[in-house]
Length: 491
Image (cartoon, rainbow, N blue to C red; front, top):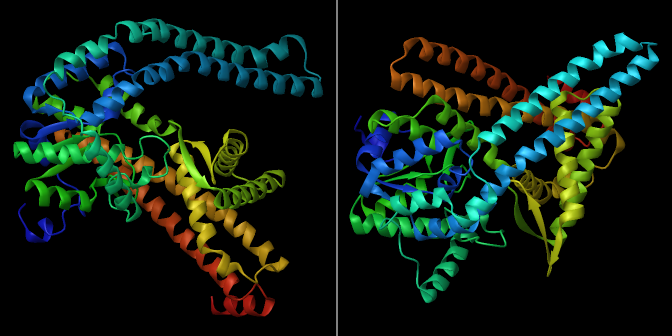
């Protein structure tokens, strides 16, 4: 559909699948570093299918020099991370098994259960863990890469060398690179995308901006629209509505249009593979798409170092410790849900990273954190910055005792909202896939599930808004009995 009401608000609405179909067929296709690194996590069959897709694009495939640089810096780490899973996961499962057996043995002793009856309790657990360990070992055997092979004669590198020969950009010269880094710092301070989310990184903070600048220059030189394939969903790249990616940020679309005079699309690897299968006529199995979906979901676990000013570091650590204490008390009192327990575990790991892994760097502390952990830290910084003035003078015990359970329930609802929005995003992909395949049965089923999810999310959001209102009322009235009664009467 052609409408100024759409074109004048580019980036505020989700583009139809047909636009991405045209993008794969006609646009310059540019890959991000994370797409190249997925090749080290895919099974051999899935890897070959992705390589075949890239080969089919021919001269319309291109990568910025910054992507190539990051690929070489991280490819060995990518395979090492993957290979480590085959050892670390069985070890963790073994610890879970031992704890479960120990718990059952304690139960058996207290209930005077012995001999064959105790074996009936523990035997199935032992067998299940052995079966899982054997399956993991089978998958390790089927995986064709090892660290020595990647270092000495990397088959993925050999394939990419052929595909990307003559399709990789040139680096900036040193003087221009220095100027561009200063420009990045100015943009990051003004929160101009992309890259401001990485501004606190110690290494390669400017990486996303360099990718973007090289992408813009290549598109302008070729006078071509661009389809950028990336699994990066940080808010300095994509716009989200209710947890669902709408597309690239409007600022990126506007900058691309101003400098290149053409269209800019951004797509993740999952949707790219699904559309490429139909548009390019290449074999892409459901297993390969499933692996891309799985990798996309776990990519958030990659750890990076972030610099935090010392005064903020102390305040954030104190805030997290306070929140963890609240959750611990709720668990001890038997009123904590499973989600709240998981939040407590999440906080315990983050506090441990702050206390034991942080390194002093001048007047700042370098802290390792996953993207999920860092998002939580950013929320803490926001709360610490915004709430002291509001809380000044509200230290009355009565107010605190009323606020704590409300905050706990609100945290629980936020966790459920996050999980629900993530589920909705997955189902949305399934719906889009069903629509593209013309499968009306799967499409109707996905629509029904989305309707149910949206209803649940609406109810949770309504409850969260109600709780926020109660918290604001308590803060405004200092928790006194008279003011509480006044609000209750108005309700």
